[in-house]
Length: 464
Length: 64
Image (tube, rainbow over all chains, first blue to last red; front, side):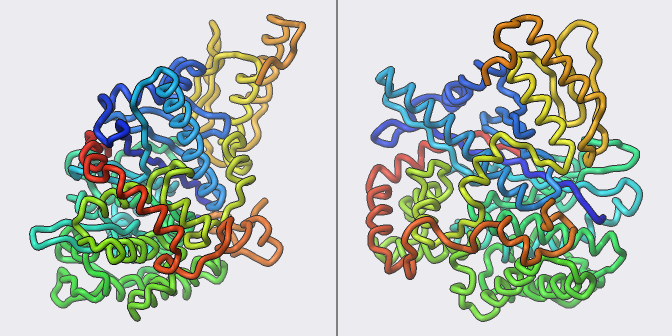
């Protein structure tokens, strides 16, 4: 596809501790405390924000943020960061409220993928694909890429096995049980096939990739989407990479996660073996040969990440990609403090790296020193908190939400529709993710404004 | 409109502003993690403050 809409949904880890590190109260209570300001203005813990994104409380008391539909990947990364900032502010408000009431409790929100007992939660990537075409074959063609892309885009971390602890590319890999299925929380697949297009079902499908790690580095997040897009485009263009049928994909993903050399043999279905590096090189070469309009930075970083693994010189990407940043960080701290990788202090460091609080989180301490990347300006991230992307239908949703907020009017919003919450109002549907103009939406916004002026002629526009 | 659309044309020179500065942090740029003493001091404080009980207290039901 020439243009594609993509989005990221992130489930955050939530913990609430006393000043001596014990659990202060139930997580469910902490989640309610965190969402108090949201419920106060939205009368629900499931709301759309003026930037077109959705903020809600998911199963297991996981605060979740789903970006608006983006067709520009830097817009998407900015939207993702904007979500962290929304939650950062909610955390600060909740903690201030605890302090005011003299409650010994502090909430931490972690953008990671598992708690201390190994319960997993996700970061889901969504890609618009065409309905016609090869949905039955596409996922299987994508799987070898998704199994091995962690050597570029993984968040890194310490994997605990019976024979000890080691640093690996991705912790999420151990929570994958199938390649392609409709399951979500029990036997999690790499690609989830739930058919919720959030668009015209006769034209579009939504590819739901749930194998990814939650990434702190803007470059890691960007690469997850940018690389996957390039490979999707390759498959759609009928430019196959040659058959790579892994004999046991789930065994393979775990081998790849544990093998920092990228050279462990992965068995092929028809005999023989292949390595993670070979698979990634094959995809990189194929997209480079097929398209001359790919982002240079993406191609350079993809190549450098593979070279870092090939040469074992991780410094090639150790200020850019999460796994390499954390590899340096964990080893420096372990050495300084004389710790083994399975020490609880290293686990504490893992959580601290993924803490979204910019005053507490270790990622931000690295970023301030130039040891982790900062690509997007602070202004662009702040802007993304209140401005929807202008090139997708999120623009229309954002306009309605701004108007409704200004007027103090209730609207019912979903990904594909908006409706004024008043008697006799019918929903306006937006089934084309690229729609950015709509006479119906213009009329709705006029209606919202006129109702507000009629109700309170002294203060048109109301209080934002 | 930006050039860095998904599947759109690659980034060109004019578009550089749009992406902000290349790989730079806000503050003073350090050589490496292992030589950044003030960073490691900051991390020591976090790790010396009830690391083990903090870790144990983070238990949540799984998500998707």
